Image (cartoon, rainbow, N blue to C red; front, side, top):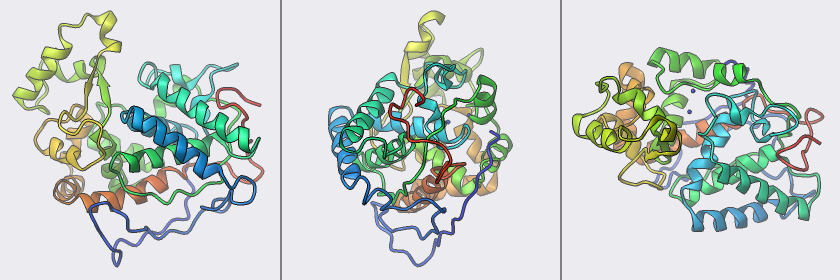
Length: 334
């Protein structure tokens, strides 16, 4: 994940009184933002959800690691000028994809997948379903397919016609070396609290990190965030790689359940085998440490909060109603 957007939420979740299970399928109670609804496309594009689901199933069956790629794109989009699919724009403007926090860290294959899914929806319902909703639905469906909870995602977002500047992206995406106070401040500026910080950090339960980022933890000296054996393994993989090639070499964030969405991340944090300093930093404040310990023991508690936090994330500074557009192609403005 690396802020400065406003976030307008009409959200109230009840933590108590909901059923809990290992799949985290209890439904959080929330008041949807005006302009959003689960059945938003029911009349204008009744097949939208089924089309997106069918395409996502094909993608995940072929390569389950794309679920992590989708989650990363959604997070990086929503944290920079809101969930408006601006991250997908590539021309004629300078794309957010080449901004410092995004450059070489967003999967080109995942961006192509979103484009392909949008094309399928456009073929059925031209000019109806936004790229922003395509990202949100594809991501949540993919997460469920790799073991995550079922998230009742609301739709009705519209798309931006402009991309954010490099400076705006840098200001909004939390850096992997942030302290706990920096992380909290970063999330608070987007209307998210410490519970959201810990739950959304759980997205590091799958996916990969580039050696150029890993190097921050193992050079010039090994960080105390890492246990010795884990640091040695990272060094074995990344240190022999010359600087020009580091951008292309990656390591799994979770070496145990690589492409599964589960609570193993929190066990990794406690065992000092989580790669980023921002992961270890969750143990530096009493409230976030307590949540890490809870989620490491109880996956259903993690899933319950993750669902709430994902819905909040998905509603950051959204465009609805007459604001924004429905882009026909996700990579270019209309």
